[in-house]
Length: 327
Image 1 (cartoon, helix red, strand yellow):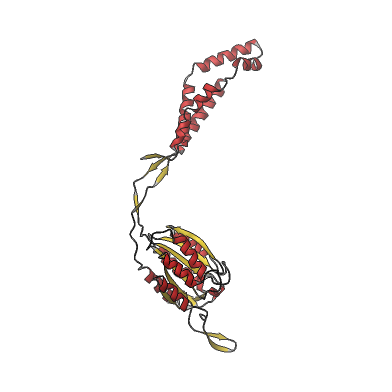
Image 2 (spheres, rainbow, N blue to C red):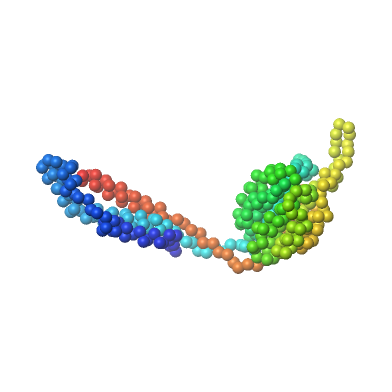
């Protein structure tokens, strides 16, 4: 069906009549006296005015061109059939740690050692791709927490902005409490039971204004379920000039606090020591039950305004050429 985006512009249709009716007319006799001071030229000018007056089609063309221009300004659109959108009803926020400790290269991707953030991007890409019907958001946190992407169905944009993130973008420290608080602020207006936060970090809370436990209690009040993921290998054998030694790259990981956050909000704590475990965690998160909502429909729109606009410009050009020819 045809739909007009701005139908109120139809009121501009009688505008030329109002201008002709109420604006003072130009004195044609004075113009003729200025332009044709000689008698012979004045006679020629009178004959040209008579010729133009005998052709009312020019006036009707101008009226038709104006109607087409008003029609184009009303922005006609063709509305297609309603298309049902697959909406699960879940609002899912992903919070990713960008602190300096994420530079630790204790993950293997395609046979190469990569830092923790790079491994997170690879695994999270497939996870986000499977979230059809979910509204997704992205929070990046370090010393401060930032909302990188508000809730949206556009999974591609969320993936792009996550891939563009880099370590220490939000600072060197880790503000877990502030990240949870920001998620609560963005999700508190959504339907209860559909709010989910997936928080991924490799350390302990070392910055921020809100403690993680207090933030978790606030999240529980708003029925925000938090799934926490502790990322990082347990122990590694590192070779150096002085020989091999055993190190623990996850010594700063506060698993106790992450577990408490998940338990207070009805979520669950996961431990990801390598890429395979991280993939398994995201597969488990895929099993979250959706919340039923009313069906949502989308009607595709095709703009049509350029057709009457092009016709109006063509008629205006034709009228101008005709006036030049008879002048």
